[in-house]
Amino acid sequence: LPYGWEQETDENGQVYFVDHINKRTTYLDPRLAFTVEDNPVKPTTRQKYDGNSTAMEILQGLDLSGKVAIITGANSGIGFETAKSLALHGAYVILACRNMSRGNDAVQRILVEWHKAKVETMTLDLASLQSVQHFAEAFKSKNVPLHILICNAAVFGAPWCLTEDGLESTFQVNHLGHFYLVQLLEDVLRRSSPARVVMVSSESHRFTEIKDSSGKLDFSLLSPSKKEYWAMLAYNRSKLCNILFSNELNRRLSPHGVTSNAVHPGNMIYSSIHRNWWVYTLLFTLARPFTKSM
Image 1: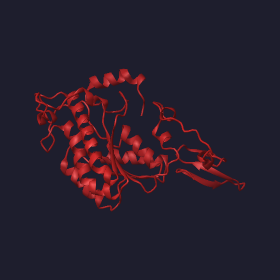
Image 2 (image 1 turned 90 degrees about the vertical axis):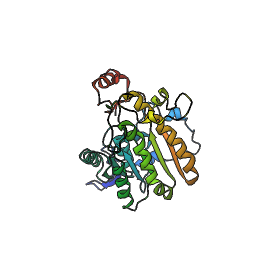
Image 3 (image 1 turned 60 degrees about the vertical axis):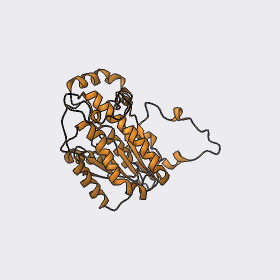
């Protein structure tokens, strides 16, 4: 049976099927939905998926049991929906969250959807390189493979501040913390191949530059001083770093069975990322009718 389905028998001895994911029952065997035509017409990607497609629809029919996934920032927004979708299709999903209370709440919401989902929360604060190291060590102590690493956590529009490592927080949370996490887990990814890394980036990476006038990388732009800081530019630069890192990671690890891709989640997609400044909240609210809800 597809993941999330169970076979039961009613009081008359007739077999029926329970869909725990969508909370419905039917006497029609759901396996009939996955029969293969003799001469199928292969639909184009544009026909299969569009802006209205959900993660659950895209994963329909996939059995991810035996797969292990880590998703950063998975207690809300895109991260939560990704974690829920993977877990409801059988993957063992670790929600890597800064706030354990919110992470545990997210786990409970997934378990309400399907009580057999394999999900748990682990502490990860990307604003602390020591926390990243402790997370990697704790994960490795589980002695499980890692097939999917989704670097989703991010801050947007945050006021200037330095992390405990002395770096500008947007740069460290959005890029450097993930960079360090991937480095620490690279050996596990390689042993688990085929595996993949997904960097959640943004089209806003196009509206910035990290080179100086001579064309060389300007490190002062990556972690700027308070005087040189502008929240939107800091976010854009961090997203550009995500893409450059993903491209190079794929070049180095794809021969070993580990692929890396950077994705754009959608223009002005409605989530809680705008919460740091009321102006951003206002802009997102005005754009709400034209965006896709979580």
